[in-house]
Structures are given as C-alpha cells and as structure tokens.
Image 1: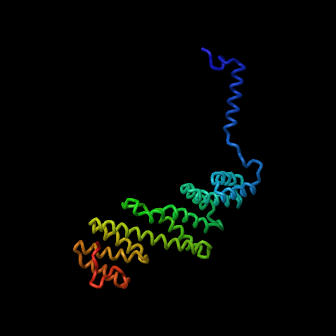
Image 2: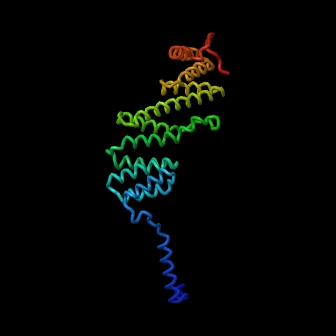
Image 3: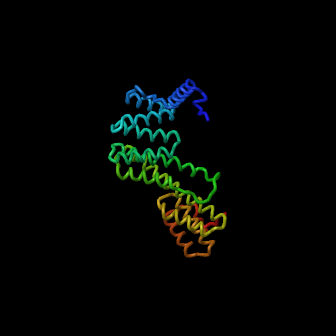
Length: 263
C-alpha cells in the first residue's frame, strides 16, 4: 500500500509540507502592538474606547496588561479593561475583570473607583426591570444584582467616605433601596388583586421590615391593613393602620370615614 506522500512523489510531498507550514503561520494572529511602545498601546486603547471601538480597545488593553506586567500601567490597563467591557455591554466579563483587579491589587489607590465600577455594573444591569413591570411576569424575581450593587456602593462609602465617588454611590444606594421596596409593594399589590391576601400581607410586611425609610412603606402599610381586613384579622389590621396614621398622617390612603377599600 502506498502512503499519501509516496503517491504524490518527493516533490509533491515537499510542496505539501511547505503549504501546510505556510498555512499554520498565516493562522497565527498577528500582534498589532509589535514595535509599539507601551505608552502608545495605552494611548491607542484609550482612543478606541472613547470612540466606541470597544473590540480593538479590549484587545489592546489585554496586550498592554501582559507587556507592562508588574507596573502601574498594567494596573491601569486592567482597570480600564473592566470599564471598557462594561461600556460594551459585556457585564460578565466586566465583573470578572474588576474582581481580578481587586484580588491582584487590594491596596491600590484606585480601590474606591474599583468598588464604584463594580456597583455601577450591577446597578445598570438590573435596574431596568423596575420600569418595565407592565411588560413582564410578576412572578418572583432574583434581586441579586441590585443587592450586589448596594453592597459595593456601601463598602465604598464606608471605606472611602472622602472619595469623589462617595456621594454618587450614596445616591445610588438610596435609589436601589427605594426600587427594591417598590418592587415588593408591586408584588403585594399583584397578590391582593388576585385574592391572595396572605401572600399580599407577607410581601407588604417584608417591604416595611427591610426598607423602613423608603416612601413605598406608606402603600405597604395600607396593603397590610387591607389584606388583614380581608383575612378577618382585625387586630393586625388595626396595628397596621395605627403605624400608617402615625408615620403618614396625611396619607392619601387614610379616608375621612376610615380605611378605604381597594377596588
């Protein structure tokens, strides 16, 4: 039996081997940063990111981190890589990169920004749901992204109260708390309207217990009172009403003739 090379002949086999070698060489990705200084690589990466050319910016930042390993420029490249992933909508990669940065450089002078970026990634990823209730199922939802955003912002505020990002982080924390409370009230209202009064009371109570300073607590107390009333629990109903009247004396839910019924 003849081998393939034997069938081709010596010259054919040599030509085939050369062709295979050329193909292998041509398939190797070209390093576009070859011959460029690390400063130029960084400059071009930033320019690409600013122009929205995220794919190339990410590629350059990745090259730069390796070429400038051990330097402050490598730290900066990793931090900006996380931000570029975030801007390009690659949440998982952005979070993985920022977590790697925080693990590699725990004492970095940019730790406050790293926490802020971590919070921002989760904040923007999840808060869209709060404005789209009408188009989505009202079943239980995972609020993990919002909670992780809150934790990152809280850590920033506590560890770096003088940070330039602290005030914005605090404002976002307040927004997250209000949004989570509104969500619980929305679910409680959903259950109430479908006659699931115990479930409605429990979700409203959760909003009152976990988010005491949120404006949504006003409606939560009203839903608790209404739900307990429908369940035939007058003492719990009156307790909820007293708390509502004490904390929100001008509440629209308090009628002149007593507690109004929900339509």
